Length: 397
Image (cartoon, rainbow, N blue to C red; front, side):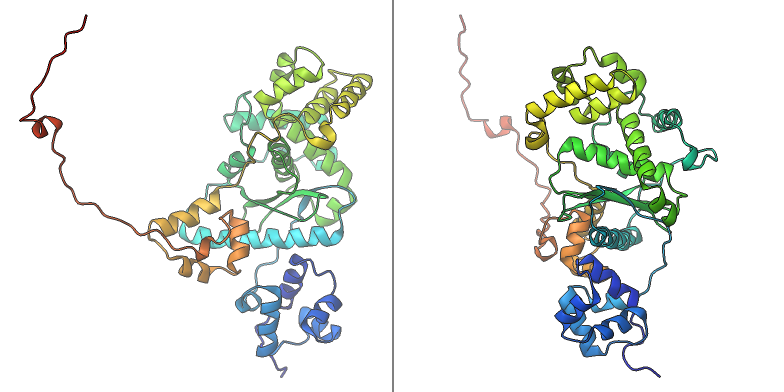
């Protein structure tokens, strides 16, 4: 019989190594001061670490020891990335691991509270993603706006909206400008979304969230292999969906009075969509041709919008997910659970939970405010206090 801790799950070691940005087994072996072959055997399940080694792994990687002793159901659904082609595989792997951790933290929240029901209807009607036309995506966005009761009005906070329809969202610093977000359906039948907070603005996050919602709507049945083989098409479809959802054609075209930058600046205030995305939308709807689009982009660059940001980017506070934060703070504030008990239920240390749940840094270490109960003392009326006072009437001319 092999020695070591038999419950150790090797795939969890791979997961946390990738989440911490440690790109190779050799790099982890150097940190742990052991042979790379030892790490390889642990990850592949050919051997198990002893108690002392597990303690060191836990300390170095900053996760509880129990993290490695509990397996989870494997999820074969692909993770969809809103990313640039230059994004490194290690960056994608790190965020895929963080997305799995978001599912783990959500499982604790769902143990104590009801999450919003998933309200994402199947609108593909049997269509394969490869056969979707632009007009199909436009129609799907219209159907969903009607289903969700949005009508033709702007979506003022896309992050809160997707939370309301049952998607769990987290926003974190990803340490790279090459990734904007990722999403996937979990085995529990709920979609999850992780958005980047690096160099973000309100309008950019609006589009990122709508883009990921596009993946969730259009690409639920897509396999990992299909995603890799048709990455460009899948990204274009998610972009089209985001544009159509945020700027419904039948209403947006009525409000565009001229094809000038100042007009798009005005419309940005109303629709909460970036000027750049509006230019792309105008072109996709054939309201402007390629020459006019290039003219607008030249003006856009000359105004410094590409490098310094667009108008209102520094004035509008960034949208933040609230669902998990609200659940955990309510549990503690309403004396349903202590912070220590809540953290004990978590598969991760406090810093990771705080980041994924949108809690303030150090929240678990802060003392809960003491609850003060007031006596039911009746206040004396003003008249009863002034029974001996003389009332002087003033003559007003």
